[in-house]
Length: 340
Image (cartoon, rainbow, N blue to C red; front, side, top):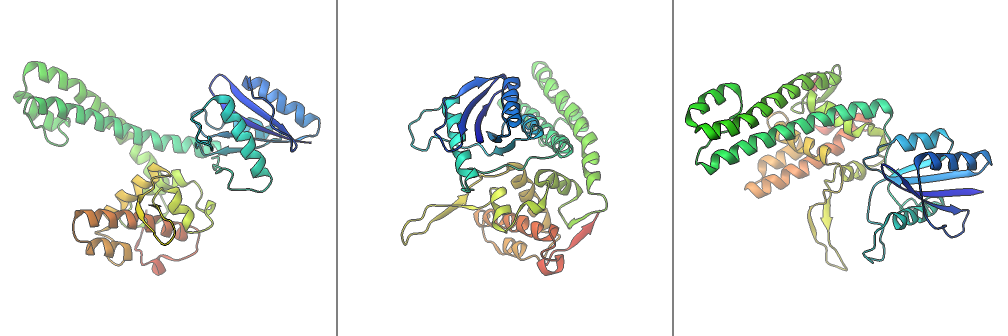
């Protein structure tokens, strides 16, 4: 007997829809995690094959590891809108039923039923969480800086970039009214504190790239952050997949003989996209023979240059995949490598 369970996971409950063999799915039920795991354990004890799936989300991969430990085959799937008929109805039970039906298709061989997420190992998850924490700290520091800019601009004062840094702050203080100085001091102190935490994490993360190589201009920190997001370059089987993972593929609206491509879809990992675009800007000075960089240099106008940068980021992601999987060498790709 084959049991399929569609799971809509929340912090305090798991809405579960069960399908037995090829029958219709049963009405969904709200279970605790303990009751769900007991149900799976009972099915496994009876010799049943159990398949489960749930959407990737804030609850992480703990449930996945528990289900796999019990002998179930679990899939963590990319979130999407499950309302195929556009009825504008969304409940936990409807989502669980839709996941169960998609799971049935997937088990039968329809791999387009949903997109399976690669589950990191506990070590990979801890490392990626550390890298993402640094990105969060950078964003928080930028917010503090922008809030200070807003306060000063309202009083027709321009603090300039990095106004919160110690030396610039000392120069700025005498120009400020007492009330404004007091308000700005709070954001300045937070920015300094956050920058200290960023400075402590940066060398720790960059050290992960020691003994490795990357295209000149990318940097040890960017390489370490990118590796933490990709986890395994071998997960991609063709050049279209890395571009899609980064959300760097063009959107499209085509029909019949008409073909129209628009801006990138951004349907992918935003951290990877951000890192690659930044890396391309730096590589302009260090990779003169790299074909995408040559097209960036030849672009005329701001708009054309930005579009060329995004295209170069997509090509760089594909070439990094080729490089890390041994499909091509740096010489073939016309990339200059740097050893860390």
